[in-house]
Amino acid sequence: MTVEQAGPATLAPGEPAQPPPGGTIPKRRRFRFGPEELFVPGVLVALVILLSVNTDVFLTRNNLLNVATSMALLAIVTFGQTYVVGAGGFDLSIGSQVALHGAVAAIVMAGTGSILAGILAGLAAGLVFGLVNGLLVITLKAHPFMITLGTLVIGKGLALIITHAESVGGLPASIAGFGLNRPLGLPWMVWLMIGCFVVAAFGLAVSPFGLRVLATGGNREAARLAGIRVDRVVVSVFVISALFAAVAGIATTARLQSAQPTVGAQLELFSVAAVVLGGSALHGGDASMARSLMGVALIAVIQNGLNLLSVGDAWQQVAIGVVFIVAMSAALLRGVSLPRRRRA
Image (cartoon, rainbow, N blue to C red; front, side):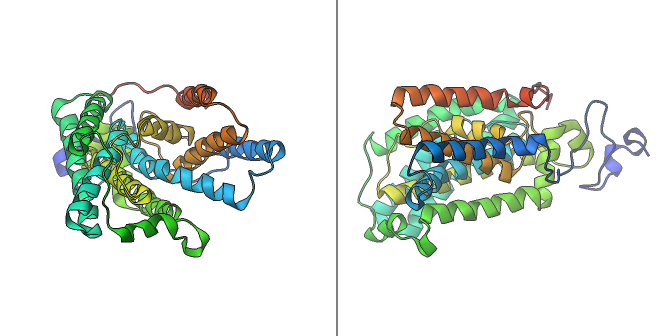
């Protein structure tokens, strides 16, 4: 029975419907060992071999732990970005959110002496920021790129205002253990990254919500006809992205034992690059946490390798810029057309 015959009102929530011409409701893609899936792991293995041959310290335990720790912050915000990209959008505000929510947590911790109160305050700030992002997108019917570009600047300004453009210290002494302790030999930041990955991967790859996210990114009209509340999904992914940014901000504050109003700069660019390098579609409908994590690992290894090879900061910026270009052209390299703006 066709959609026209049944009518949207006769479909039960979540019941698949025949999509309109030009789009389908995507299914979760099982992992395959094809050229697309093996491209980033292959590049990563090649870099590891190259750096192992040209440096004496790359494969040492301390350096590998440094790589894992350095990628933790980017990985956590990338998990949230993956949800937004999977739904067909971008969140360019996450860099400033890391600074803002971390500052909120630090101010509350310093004022109350309670770590729990600071954590809850930082998460609450993330919840509000994500709601604002999502509601602006669905209300103004504007592209998330432009909306979150505006909230990126707003977030930076708010972080400077509430911190008076200075670092915020005076945190409870017990929070120092977050940066010093190494349960089972791994830093807390790495364990936090692993925990966030498990939660994010379950939500996208296993839960029904993850399928609704990919359906929304694949074809919004088809998703609506299938009974999916698209606007609710859009708001939800921005809230999820903001909450992951809040976790990253709070963790960074705990690790540094202070809040820095300028922390998180360029994280929004690196997170988008990591998602796309991992193989997720720029136009939405196809995303994977495992592939996003692989993209983060590739960026972290490149940065670590440049440091080990004593490449100057200026040339490192050039190299990272090349990585961004490669990431944004990855869809073309895989033979996938560039995204086109769909009507909401």
